[in-house]
Length: 258
Ligand code: ADP
Ligand code: MG
Image 1 (tube, protein in one colour):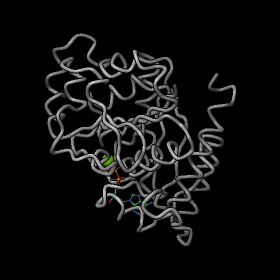
Image 2 (cartoon, helix red, strand yellow):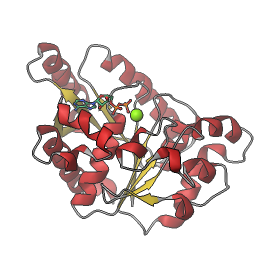
Image 3 (cartoon, helix red, strand yellow):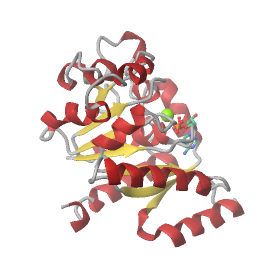
């Protein structure tokens, strides 16, 4: 079971879109997949076709020890993967967890009994370096970083990479950067091409080969509760996420992951 956190402390950079579409593409390609929504906004939950307003249980009681993962997970009816859903209740968890023992490992502990249930677990992190994100990073084997190829992207990246290094040193020896995913990419933009080239230069193999273009079909899909890769399979964005899933499946077969 490979557990990957999708993280970037900036909002609106494509974390949720990446988590939902990667989960759906992995499921399409025969991988048993669980998506964990760690953002109180619940966008990954809604985008998976699960109504955040009608949840009986969610990730929140799992984190504070009032429910198990087995009790709280639901099937994405449109995506074919499991979802540990979230809604606004999760905002309270941040405060409540402060007093709990082993507070940064609550999610890791919840996953421990489910090692054989899934091939991939994807964690959609909120846009902050909060206790929730810390739980995501402590539970994960690696981080997938979606980023737009714009001027300030590199600056934000060093903050995130430093945080990952600190978590690696102090809390989770398994953690590493799996890779950087270029999203909302506009190949006609000179700046995007320059930043993309810089990324490849600095990060080498850590930059995924798959590149997700800016594609309106990916942005339309969430309002239908259907992952973009299934909403319009022929769209360029959908095909890019399918290629990304294929790349990741190949990647985890390499010695780095054994
Ligand atoms: P985050 O989770 O990092 O805040 P989102 O995945 O919610 O970011 O994306 C922010 C916005 O950009 C959303 O409205 C989403 O639909 C849109 N978006 C994300 N990726 C793409 C893309 N490749 N093409 C077009 N729109 C996108
Ligand atoms: Mg999000």
